[in-house]
Amino acid sequence: MFGLSHSNILFNGSFLVALKPIIIISLLISLTVNASNEDIERVLDEAEDYLIVKPSHSLTLLNNISDLSSHSDTMIIRWHILTLRASVSMNQLSNMDDSIAKLITYEQSSYFKSNLVTIFSAIGIWLRRSGYPHYANTSLHCALTFAKSPKHRLALLNSKALVARDLKQYQHAQSLYNQATLIASKHNNQIKLATIDNNLGAIALDNQQYDLAEKYFKHALTGHQNEDNRSGHITAGLNLLFLYALQDQTFNYQRLYDPISSLTYAFPSKAKRALLFWIHTTYSANGGPVTDNRLKKRLISEFELLESRRVKQLVKVYLADKLNVEVRIAKKPQPRKINLSIITSMPFCNWKSAKPQ
Image 1: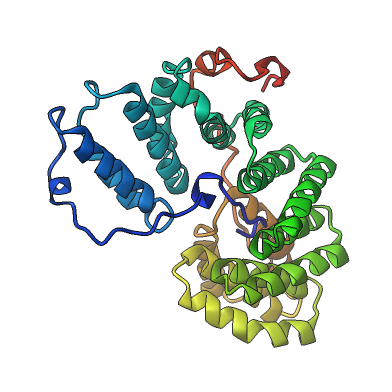
Image 2: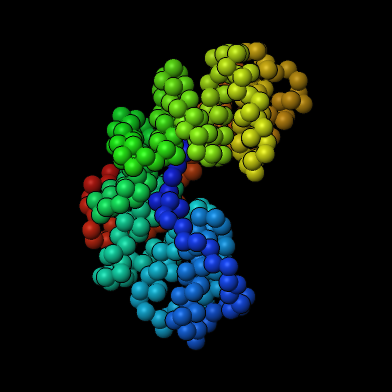
């Protein structure tokens, strides 16, 4: 979200097979090695059906399969790929460690090779979130070289742009978003266009280009609103409110606040509500410091609910200092300990191009 970006992940952007109304009774107990191929296939199909609407349920279904060792390589690879896709949505990095290590052992399989885009995209997101942006960029670039469908290319360009922004390579990020815009425009993908506008606005805000940021956020707001995309609508709206509060644009702020606050408080996200509270407190303070100790404590408490380290940094620099509220951001965590040598031994990618961390 506001960090001020709105990401789209390849795995959750894949097509959704219509949910099957049939309840699979065998899922109530763990499937064993003796389960038939048909039983396993049904579970895998069901897990894939839930990837977008409820990835936590996908993981539950997948974990009900206790042993696949006697089944085909294709079935085992598919199980690990689905686990990666669900784990990305749930941000369960440690859950991805094992599946990635297992998948690599099947790198010569034809089914593995036919799913290179998904596998290297997953590894790229895993590396970025684990604290290895340069290696993440290499993996995502590798996935992009194999990607043919517009949906896959859009998602991968977005992921690469997020890495570029993390590395403060803003011009490169803008170039990637421009490429994504051409694809989204060609296929009339209005939600993706709105998402790209929001992310470009975030980059402009990073660089204190407020007029440009406002332009992008307005386009994003209109796009998500027209497509009835509530999450994106709220994100772009909060970004605009942030700008208006920061620049004391009273008229624009008052006109936007009521509809965005109504959507935000009806949306199941404490992080979004916490951000709205900080924004509105800043606006209400009229540029002055907060002197009420109870309000200060509330702001500090809400600060801990913010969505990410990036959001906290922006709130601290632009809002907390203005309100004279002392908040602390934990030191940037060290990269997770992972076996990079396993990754860099994989074929198909130029791992030597990744810079040392």
